[in-house]
Image (cartoon, rainbow, N blue to C red; front, side, top):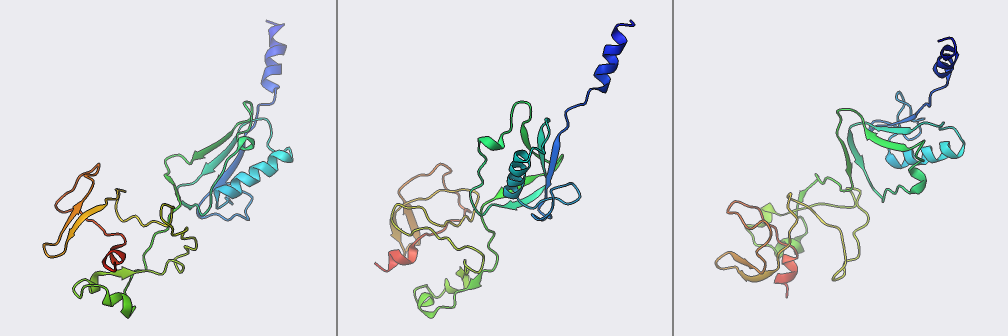
Length: 207
């Protein structure tokens, strides 16, 4: 027993690996140091701060944990994590939501400032009974600057109005009977009370 005691004492006194912790919150500020009391505001800033701290040798030997508080985080550009952001087997970098909180990364913009169509030329192209129900919005005022290239076969800005994302080509449009005949059946089918929206309907009628 006398030989084991010094070894046990030595193990108890050995320093334990400590983790580096950074905190991010929608209510934070990217000029903050990333502590629990003064969290950062964005994921890119948290990633960059970890990179800087690692290069400066300030992260220690334990895991680095980034605690993400619940809420919505707007993603305005591609958020990239490379090999350098993974850490090592002994010192991994761990991104985790705060316990019991829901974290959402949102790349879209919620549009709320819808207004009646005021352009007389556009209103004249709409049926009189439809005019009060058609709305427009200034996307640039909503913070959307990149609309993509409007060319056939290319990606462009999209508007989602329902939980389903399906597009159907129109085989026949009967305005007298108020019927639309789609080409495809669709994965979800059609429902009597479902909401459906036309794309490029004005361009179709102008041909």
